[in-house]
Image (cartoon, rainbow, N blue to C red):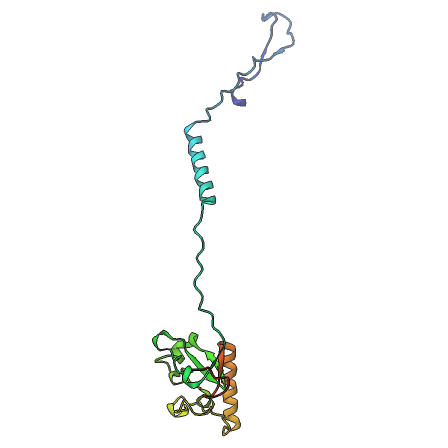
Length: 193
């Protein structure tokens, strides 16, 4: 706007003849600058900027879909199992995979690829795995065939086998949930059929 104001002019109002005595020059102020014309608020660029601003405000404050949290696993209740009730938790038919070590039942479903059907330790799924783990043997012979028989007391294990069993039990305790305890058939704590 300052560029529209004409520069001040200097003039000599006295006689401008060449033989006259020079007179001091007098400053004559230019006429006041006209008021700048106001641009219309509704100019196209302003409308575009206003529209863009409104879109940004809408995007920032628009209603958002509620966050859907994934469903967690169903709650596990600590139960008392017998060999006959534990056998059904072998990973078949989308069942969880449980195994017992020294009377504690572990949910090893997160390790289904190891303990479930087709895994290297699948023989232990739904069974008491204590003797097999102590012997570092994953054969069927390590499992109790008669599910109605008393639980294996592991009394014939030597020191190394007990140490093996202890390390397996610690590993399971660190990695998997304890979901129950294993008792023999006919035990007073055994669930009623």
